Image (spheres, one colour):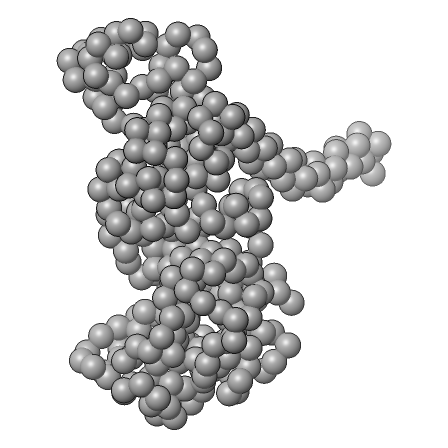
Length: 319
């Protein structure tokens, strides 16, 4: 081999080996930038940082995934920001105020720029401050801003998660059934179901024995517990990516689990069963398994999507 060829190959291997590290460093950097901005805005407004983080995270996850990721994703309509009649979109504070715009100067340069992260966060803080500083006041402010109950609920849940863990870089995942036990699954999303009328199967069935531990796949908040005609004993967890995780046909719940509780990947939430297809307590109408479904909220509606590719990935990560 020619020495020059050897250098080219070594250089290529070096690039391949260190590419993931570079990508990881860039990812960490953007999370650090966000945290610094959230903490700075907290100091300016006295509103806890995790509310800004949750609002930003919510808006990031209703956007088209093809859009380039920004440090801050909170969005204001131009007319709302600059004020009705400010056709030139002048960003000087005096002009915006005269037109009734809500844009505020967060970095002290005398201007409220709609694409400036500090101005955006500070303006959101001022929107919240109009209603007060306690939790109920913040809920009212969010409702007035978004006009949607599920949006308010999602943001408040996400803020609880961020507060619990103290940061926003939460990327771990877990398989929903303990992989130390025997289990099997295949892609069953979209299959026909007949009980309760013709419908499609909105999830993946993971077959395992009675009592096999079921665990949270993600960071989130327990939003729903109780009996469901179709799903039997079920749990719903809303995660920090605007996704509702649905666990059904369970044998029972963990003793200390309750609605409103923050969970993380790997937390045991109950066990596999065969409940459902009837009134409370109905069991044994089908082999024991966990029905696992995922529902995405895009800011307007909530819809089911196929969890199978994610389950395969989380299975590999868990082993």
